[in-house]
Length: 422
Image (tube, rainbow, N blue to C red; front, side, top):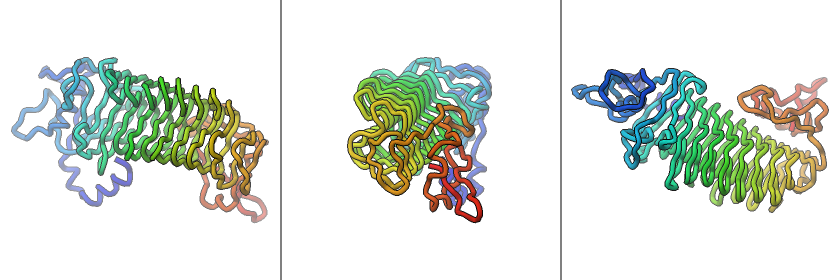
């Protein structure tokens, strides 16, 4: 669960809650439910789901589940091999999680859960029971969901007081004939220092967000995903916040929203983030907005709209502040003019920027998308960039770091106010 929910639980639940949990250690990469003297990942999840009573037998050699359990997944590749679908008890096919649970690997490089192209990998809260699930230090890969079903890697319905949280997790190489090749969420989702990359589906190939959902990406990346229709990176129908995150190299093969499709009824807030190198074979290469988007200190660069609006296609309300738009093929902006809150910079004059601190027809001299420090790639600014020291001086009092979590401000000289970069 999120840090806020964790703090609330620690206050409301008290220390007694921790006395009724179990730590279940997986000791084999095999996928089975046979009593043969080991504890597979599937058996560990079934034990955590069922919480066997003291008088009940344990599930193979797995510790009995008891409340909000933790499963430890040592280094290894854990491939799913038991075929089957249409059940939600983790007995066949995907790994169904039906109670509060943390699954903790050694690192995303070392602990790999592989769907084996058999089914999706994880199915979280299929009964809509408001459970809290955390996946940590894992890779989730090679999940395949056919028959127009959703969520190739992960499908989550954790909502209400529940949530799915991914911490240092890689979701890659998954596929869905429906929507959400990497992740399908109908509920609450948080990603921290995580990556959703190289997934494919009909729509929302990286992440598909249903209406009413709340999704928060922090220090995370959605990259290299491909949809056969719209929304190569993210299809948002709910409430999405991107903080210090990257949406890059995603493709909408037929229609709009290479990086992000923000649909009717949806809101997106992007802070200290980057949309780079996304492609839509229609319009809206970086962002296609059909409702409400706010950009604060965002870079929109190097995106392509084959039919126009390579950077942003705005068809409703989009507000931008301290945002850089450059090198977008098909134009930086299309559709309705965005609302400028000032201090934006554009290398052309397609966005109608005319507020205090706005610069048009000005090259920001962005470097290539690269590792410039921090958990996600960024476009560096050289010392000669007109974006340096060109931000709102008043904002320098509160905005102190950039996408890399590095200082955004210069201290000023001779008692002058600190100076903020765009």
